[in-house]
Structures are given as C-alpha cells and as structure tokens.
Image (tube, rainbow over all chains, first blue to last red; front, side, top):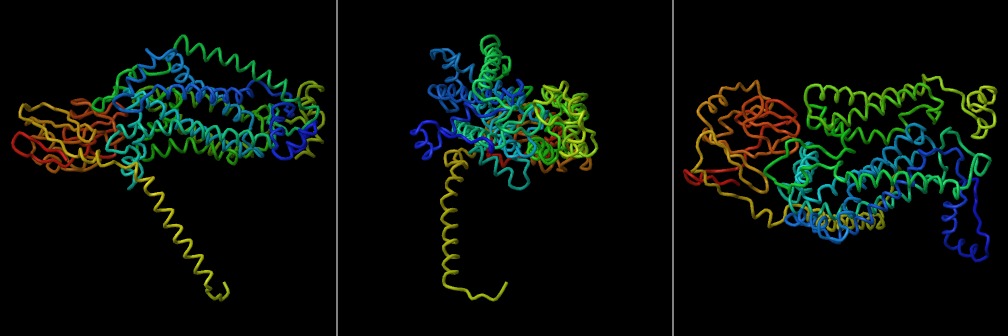
Length: 422
Length: 169
C-alpha cells in the first residue's frame, strides 16, 4: 500500500478524511490496487466473510428461541425445528454453515500453503489467521454442545477431558471448566455464553487480518512483489468485486444443496437422542472438520503425549513462516515443494478418513504413519527443501510472462537479471 | 549496578505496584472461582443405593455427582480371576484386595480414565469392561490392561451403611 496514497476529491471529503480516515478505508474496497493475476483460489477470503456474517445473523435469531438449560435445551431445539416459523431453515443454515465455513477456511489455508502466502512480509496476517482458525474450532465445538444430544454431551466430555492430561492441575482444570463433577447444566450455560462471544472476537480479528493484508497487499499466484499501482495491478472494484461475487454465488449453490437436500448428512444421528450421562454412544466421532486432529490424538498410545501431539499439529502452523526456509513463495516455481505439497494434502485427507474409523488394526497403523509424516513435512522436509531445492526462474513482473509467452521462457531468457534479484 | 540510594519515591512505586497487584488479584479471582462447582452442586455429594436385590454376576449403574458408578456383585470365579493377576502384568499396579475391600462387591466410577466415556460391561479382552471411544480394556477389577487409558478406573469413597445399602460419597 506504501506506493498507493489516497486523497478524497471533494473539499468536504478532505475535511472529513483528515479527521476520521473512513474514506481511506472505503478506498480499500474500491480502487485499491490488486494483482491482476489473482485466480479463483483468492476468492475464499470474501466467501469466509460471508460465512462469518451468515453464522452471526442466523445464530442471533436462533438464540431468540433456544433455551440454554440441560432440561430444556434439547426440546427447545426441536421446538425451533417444528414450531418456529422457518426455524428449520435457520437452524439448518447455521448447522451446515459451520461446515461450509470450515470447507472454505481449509481451501483458504491450503491456498496459502501452495502460493507461500505466509512468507515475509505476511507472517502477521498468517498468525492472525491461525488464531482465527483456533477460535473457529472452539466456537464450532461449543456450538455442537448446545443441542444437548448424545454427541453433544459425549463430545463435550471427551474434549474437556483432554485437559485432564495436564499433570497435577489437570483434574482441577476440568472440574473448573465443567462447574461440577461432570458435564452438566453449568457447562451448558457457559458454553452458550462463549459460543455467543467468540464470533465477535473472530470479527475483530478478521478486521486485523484484512488490515495486515492491506499493508503489503495481496500475494499472487506468481508469488512476486508487485509495485502498486502499476501494469501488474487492477482496481479492486469492479474487477475483484465481480470475481468474488461470482465465486460466492457458486459457493452458495453448494451451501444451498446441503441445506435443502441433505441437511443432516454432515451431522450424526446420535445427536437426535437427548443427552444421557449413563450411556456413551458406541462410536464417538467429532465433526468432519476436526477428524484429522482426532486421528493424531488417537494414534499416540499415551494420553498426555496424544494431547500434546494433537495441539502441536495445530500450533506448528503458526511457526510455518520460519520452518519454510525457501525464499521463493509460489509452488509454481518450486518443482519439489509442489510434489510434497500434494503429498501433504493427501496425508491430511487420509488422517481425516482414519479419524472417522475405529482406532484399531490397519486404521491405527495408517493413522500412525500419516501422523509421523505430517510432522516430518513441517519439521524436516520444509526446512531442508529451502536449501536443497533447485527452483525455477521467477519472472520479474506479472506482466512479463503474459507479454513474453510462457513464464519460464521469458524469465530464462534473461538470467542475468535474475542474478541481480538474488 | 552502581550504588544507589533507595529513595522515598522507590518505596512509593513498590507499594503502589504491590497494592495494585493485590487489588487485581482480588478482583480477578471471584471471576475465575465462580466457574468452580457451586454450593448446590456440592450439596449432592452423596448417594445411597439399595443392593438387596442384586445376584452375583449382576452390575448396576447409579448416578453420583452426575457421573455413573458401577456396582458389581462379583461371582466366585471372577474374584479368583481378579486376585490371581500378577502386579507385574499391570500398567497401573493395584491389588484387587485394595480395590474391593469386600471381594464380592466392586464399586467404582464408571468413567474411562482416558477421556471420560462410559465403558461397556462384560466386554473386551479381559472379561471386564471395554471403552468404545478409544478402545481401552479393563479387567474384572476395573484395572486398565490394554489401550490408551493411563490408570485404573477410580474407586470412589463408599461404605456399607448396612448389609443391603451402599453409601457413595
């Protein structure tokens, strides 16, 4: 943004903007210079904003009908489904909206992994993003407890018990989290409060996320720094706005398909049975978006180490800008990283699959291998790859490969300039 | 550090910081402690169970502090089996004699020590309990034998009020 300064045209605009730079802010949604080669993987930021707003609006409405009490919560959810006008629609949007939110966030994260969007100077954007992701998981988990079905109750029991793995103070922490000696009414009411609070914390962090993004500006598929404004950029409006809007519409079709045709496919039938503290369902599984981490938890045969491994799998992402030693951002110019990237994608999908299966026999073996590989990727492969990999020549600008034919050809023609870049 | 005289101002800084820290602590603690079990939850701390109708080989589950408690009247074979196990074979060595004072009656929290699920009765590789969540196997004394659970199932505080009644808690 440093190359791009905005001054309002009208005198009143100047007067106002000098006192409160709201117009500068608005400018970031109009003629803010954006790399012209952003592809559809870059539309998920807008889609995620839509998801957050959808969850807040539908959640607000649901809270008007829901009763956060262990004796009434289950019935009040059924009341929403059967009696409240359009209650079924609003609840199905909210429940499936959580899944859509995670679907979009995983695409958004893997986009960053492919194009190296987490690298300097975008580390703060990335870390804020990881914090948002953690808060999303907390919000989703607590929201899943609110209907007070069997999966709600036992999911809450298992997840809160993760803290009991902490030596000495673990049991005390769990009792404190529960407000009793088991998951019960005090647990439900505090989860409801926190579930209501977290989306607004996320909203605040999203503002910081976008603010931090607008300091260096967007990364792009070529992964090079772009001078703004220049031949390499287009104004945010209308170019990116239209592209984002189109992608959002496509996304909403998928969203609507789940809401209207298979609203319960991503849930568990057991959650339509009211919570019973005496009976654990035969097969406890978290929601699909937590399965890879669940598989990591179960693959370690020790309670404390299992919890440590699961949390490390998430926190290791925050260290990614420093674990990846390569100076080249985009995987387009990193032939080896590109292959390891796809292996990682497969590894995470495999973890998700075995996380849904019983933890025994072959599934357990696969989960252990996949867990080991996950950590190997971040702790060994990425740091070494930065030094060993022979990267392809990077173009000097976005426009160059367009005008000079294939990006590699254009850049290869002038290796001397590349040397200068290094 | 050079020799520096302690001044009245240093004393004021330290005193202010100390009073401030106590004040913040005294304000924050009620906010934290309000989440701990309240008086009404603590009041439900004991449960009495009538076990007069139980035959050997039967298990009942009762609720105590919101948690299931298994009460099993064990058969002669089961007691022998539980007592024959060598301590070396156990992940969390405890004698059956210490877990079931009256060998016929096993009273324990029906909560898996891994992540808190309720294990299933008469299942698993050791003829005791099996936790369906993450595959922990317990023997007929409720001791962990195989799987991720770190310890044996907990024995709550209980006593026989009379021949037919157990008071838990």
